[in-house]
Amino acid sequence: MNKNKNNSGAFDVCIDDAFDFLSQEYAELFEGSDATAFQHPVWLDTLYRKLAPAAAAKPLVVAIRRRATGRLAMVLPLLRVPRGPMQTVEFADLRVSDYLTPVCTAEVFSDLLRDEDACLTLRQLVRPFDLLRMCKLPDGRMPVENLLAAPRRVFMETNAYATVLVAPFEQWRASALSRSYQKELAKKLRQLQKKGTLSFSCCDDRASVIAAMEMMKKFRGPRFRARGDGDLLQRREYFDFYSNIALRGLGAFVRLYTMKMDGNLIAAVLGLCHRGSFLVIMSAFDIAGYKSQSIGALMFEQVARDCIERGDQVLDFTIGDEPYKRMFGAQPSPLWSVTQAGSVAGSLALFALRQAPWIKLAAKRMAAFKLLPVRT
Image (cartoon, rainbow, N blue to C red; front, side):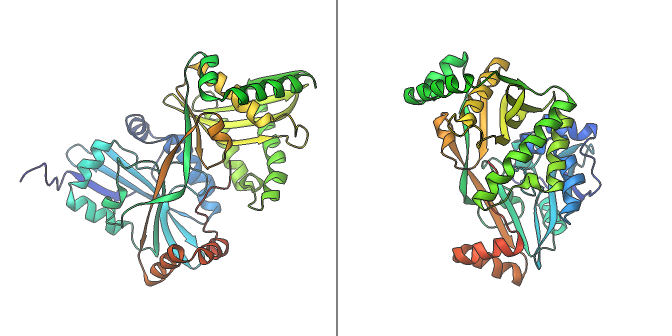
């Protein structure tokens, strides 16, 4: 048999719902993989233990090993999630992750696709479902639609944004920001400094993390109520999730930046560090107290400065088409989604979601079927 065409028998596929994401073998797999920060061991361990039970979601972790050695080759972190009357199978996301991908290398994924028996087993193991949803796919290197025999991927309605960082900070600022925007921020900074003693720092202990998370919850509540889409941080299970991530990952793969005026917190940015990139996942600002000083923009400028000084190459604003991202030189990257119906109910829901925007909106509200992120 030509192994370039068929690789059947090379992989063993199983469901391991008790999979240990803090194990040494997963740590080694993740470090050598093409996965993103949102598949980090601590991130997934916290998601499965903290968020999944609160959402009545059940683990569906697909573990794939090399048959010859038993070595872990790929993990597909999935969940079975009830959405109204339907049961969906989807990536481990629950509205907190921005990029979703199998945990392996593109080469291993390609090898797996050539193992027809393994692919068939995987497709059988993830069933039954009414609807299979794979959203927030960052690129086409690992076509999960081929792995799952699902319809072709489609573009999502939103993009991700990132800006390339170069040293020194002044050079990046001059190339990424327009001259008029540079002048505007310099003016805002002078206005802010006249109000008192301004400081910028990165949290380095438990007390500062807890204080910053409480501040973020306080400032984000009114802001998102005004927008009408609510804020996840106001929900206990999500506040615990983000706080847990910040505490467990501090000094390793998490940074929590804060800005203070006379010792009082007025802004914060929480993000993940991964292979030379800083990925922004949540921010909060005292907009009411500093409405005219653009403290959000000033905060991100300071974040960029610190990232450059640390040697980061990319400031990733992640998912969402907010205009401010382009003002920092961030360029859009498309995201894809894959959906597949597994029942008559799933087919009807998928048809409605694709054909009628107003039905799509109603379905989202009725079943918490949120396809787009709610945070910036």
